[in-house]
Length: 462
Image (cartoon, rainbow, N blue to C red; front, side, top):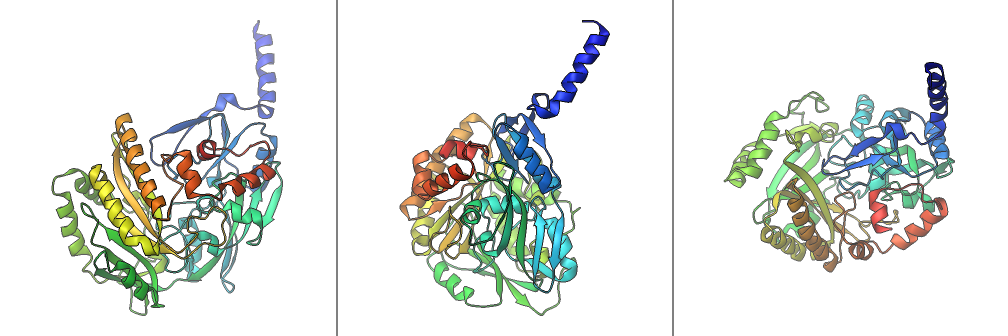
């Protein structure tokens, strides 16, 4: 082949490339845990619903969807798929301060939304405890936070826009069967492109700390939840015994703020946090060190704006490196009547397997009657386990074993486990935890008959 023929062939290949799977642009998609990488055929970063619709309609194979990539088990990726990175779809589309509603593109982070809301003295109604997640990703996992009495995100969403498997654009309201399936659907039904949310006033909050016994916590929480001033609440169970809840509540107040920033500065340095977490998780006497630090810090009188407490940054928990070890989450939802026996069972499993658990945070949720794959079919306490794990194969296998014990314990207490984390559950455990999966599968078959929307989660369990 001479130079002229080579250039003609290269030009022809370049012209044809957009119409073919872009094998030359393969990408490795890595989630927040850093434990697994999934190689996709191509990655696109759409900026509009029209671009998403065109990409979905044109691509002949599997499609996966990702936002902040905080899910930890392959929920955002599928081998040789077209991966849609939604983070360029980050605009506020409309804001109505009087009606307290906002419509956003799904790739916007909660923090970017907070920047837009704060000048209007408005705040997000329901979100995770940290602000780095995207709104669309939060819809897909049906997130929750520390908001007392509010439950999962589905309770604060007025409408959704979804791109279906044929590229069509659907406008969905809470009465829609598809709307119900999208929450906790992990991208299995389509691509969420726009979300309309309810908002709340941005009040000042005063921190109240109280230590209680494990046996008395459910009753004490019930009393606390009757106080209309309580906006946020969680209780921490600390190693090694996980038997002494420390309640941390944030109450609406008229007192002046002790922290002048209305939002946590984006450029804050978290080196001290990282050093403290390393010391607590690695050094002998780490539990005693943590207790001493907490005793000093939690005695301080603190009043902050609601948006400040809602703008926490995951960088404050990020290790200096994930090369040798990583920090992970798990979560279990237990009916309120079974709180005590599950807490004791969980502590026994963690101690028996020498799990390097840094904390278990307890939250509460009323029953979720809106979403199809609900993690709270009844009123529940949520146990959020934050732990450290080595990155070796042996450590991964060990974690799989004790995680399945925890899942069995949750199931035996009438509870469920949360799906955004490592895919350690067996298919039978998944089916037992989410018996509604059959209805979800039927809905997916109807909306996506070719199985275009795929990820590692649904590939394992559906």
